[in-house]
Length: 261
Image 1 (cartoon, helix red, strand yellow):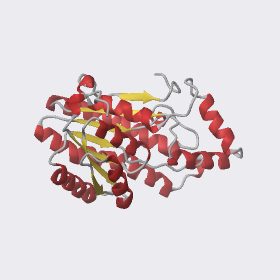
Image 2 (tube, rainbow, N blue to C red; image 1 turned 45 degrees about the vertical axis):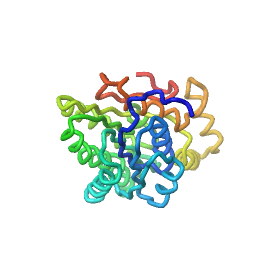
Image 3 (cartoon, rainbow, N blue to C red; image 1 turned 60 degrees about the vertical axis):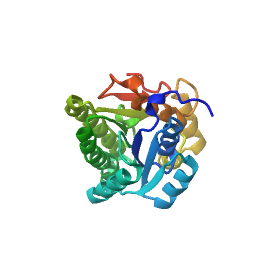
Image 4 (cartoon, one colour; image 1 turned 120 degrees about the horizontal axis):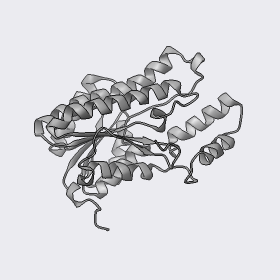
């Protein structure tokens, strides 16, 4: 087994939401490879348990519904008990739906904001209180390319992710005196189950083929390929490391060049 790139991470403990699949699962694996002990929280406990069995390294599965304060409080308390502490918080749980802006329903709007925005607020607040009390730690939130550029057919999703960046910046300023860093990652077109659904939705809404949508995603990416979850995970690991010790309040683009500002 290769040596970890960031040996200072060995033995640190992480609470990670939305970790059973996709980007979250890749983040969990990447952190575990550095010796981080993971409390992997997900709304699908069975999927979380399958994930931790693959991750190993003392990882534990915890059930959470990030939309509900009592669920996040219980999940975080359980995580602290089972892994013995927490220095790293990864608020990754997220959802998407796709619809034309003028045809959006209240339910679609609320669903995206409840998970993507309220979920990050609750996770950051509840876990952040622990980090402040301990006087150390970092938070990384999963935002999106759609948090930097409004995305057609994803207006509600974009709005929820723009809110994540605003929250991240404000929280970073508030927690900096306590020594807590708060950053976000903004992935682009990432090959996940969520993206597969979005390709089908977009194809249907635009009246084109799924292959055309996929090819457009690649064409918009200067590095010439679809992003992988591992591309995001490696940046998250860096943000959790001491090498990022002077970075806070940032929304880091991990888009292959789709967005460069």
